[in-house]
Length: 150
Image (cartoon, rainbow, N blue to C red):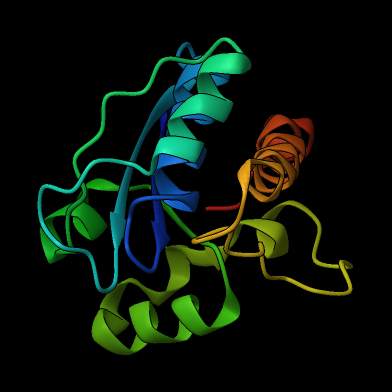
């Protein structure tokens, strides 16, 4: 299988997508690379303090600056994983030529899930971020447990 190049997309690129990219790169660096971007990101923001704390407590270092989703990142990626179905719809509408490689993370790993969205911990307490980390970790761990599409 060719190396997987994953772009994780969320809203502001300060919580879910940087956490997801850090988890992927920590677990699967031998199988690919992950980057992250946001639909409404402010270029250059740090990841939130709680996101960085939870990652560090789980043995993952994260150096991050937020960035907007751009065509170059979509072209680079073999797979684009969004955090919600709403994100997926926006990315597909913005980059329709790449629709065949855009999925929610949950949809790609297990389309039988009741909800295909990963809850946004933004403005929540550290426990909210830990729950989001746990959910991201579960689905990113399962990424290579089934035949990959595309």
